[in-house]
Length: 339
Figure 1: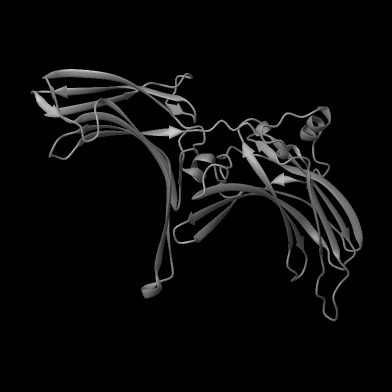
Figure 2: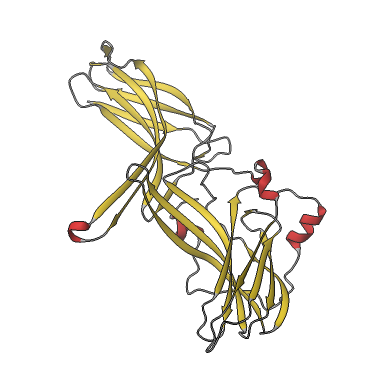
């Protein structure tokens, strides 16, 4: 009988989370209780994204799947694929190995309709029999420096007009302008949001909601279909504006600890974020919403003194407070990901 023991070394920080570009090291032990012949013994590192969902019902029910492979490397400790057999004697045989992880790996993820997973396998190639293998799952984290993307330091501003349908006519417009001083944020960072109203309509805006929206898109490249899930991660409420008046509000959100944006490294399961500002109108009128896409990473942007002051500035509207859900989504609950 053959027994395989696979042991990974911790990363330079002393933990068992691994990062793209790092050298994955370990030791594998092959224990034999009798002399046997094998064709080879190898280490395989495999990582992929896979998603699946269904649409429709009955005979029209369709299942969609998407896969994307990021790493599939094989390193032989002895032997080769399709090569001659080797006779191994009874006892313990230990081998050290090292595998370079690719730089463009997305992080490990486990969400409702998909997963991004990685594993290390030690495989014993046995002639004319089923190969014997041992697998160890590994966690890939990313250390995303937002300063590597200069475009994230640019401000963003969007203005839109809305008219309300009243009993006899269409109202004068509400002009709503939303701006942020930059587009990249890290956990525990304050995201300032500027909201400007020019309300020429006869409709009051009772309050303004500011939300951090997480969007997960599952894609099946083979079937050219996608599915989108949205989650309100955190919400704050600030003041509105009366009919026939103007107002500028300085508010914002404290970015909680969530998984980073990953749309640059994965096409099958993408995680993106946006800041949504919603003007809640009185009566039966529909609310107006403006969204600004942002990127969430690990290392915050570095600014000059002007931007640093903007980042630390407190909102001018003291009534803006976090909205309390019955159970606010935490990092682990939202992503099901162990730190």
